[in-house]
Image (cartoon, rainbow, N blue to C red; front, side, top):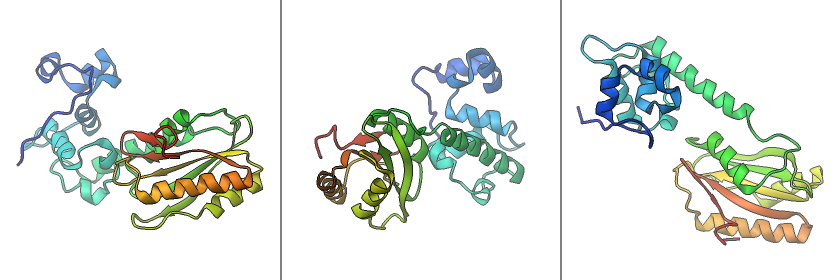
Length: 236
């Protein structure tokens, strides 16, 4: 078995100090759940190991295989039960925990009527789209005061599918009488660097918007743990 590495948040205790303090559940009670590492959160959910493998090792194996919680959240029951110490019940419990997190994010999504900025939208949608294995193009339609009229998913496709045509975006803008819009799409690779097609598409959006009198304020690219504003980068 390959050696696993501990994944520690910036402000967590060192590994040796954590072991001296006690078990993850007790430490969470004392120091707060937000201070737990990804591996410790998994230990709290899994609760027990096996005769041959400790609880800590089961959690470490999961993190070594999937690298982070975003990728682990996409694992199927069959994939999870391949790990020693994880049966069907524990696999379902893990999936339930991830689903609760996903639903909480969706329920906190941008509200109609809220005044927004590229930073606010980027932060919100980065949480929603991180780890998504399908490319999605979402448009936030705004009025003259930058208040949200509608958040609409325009396009969902495979990794190699070409992106939606500007006419689909502006057709909806006309129907909504939107004055401005912000376009957002994710890179399933997790990297935010825009492709040549991304840049060309963004410029087409800006040009179309100028003709129609509907301003394209920004095009955001969502990655695994960050987003990129093409407006802030001077690309549009």
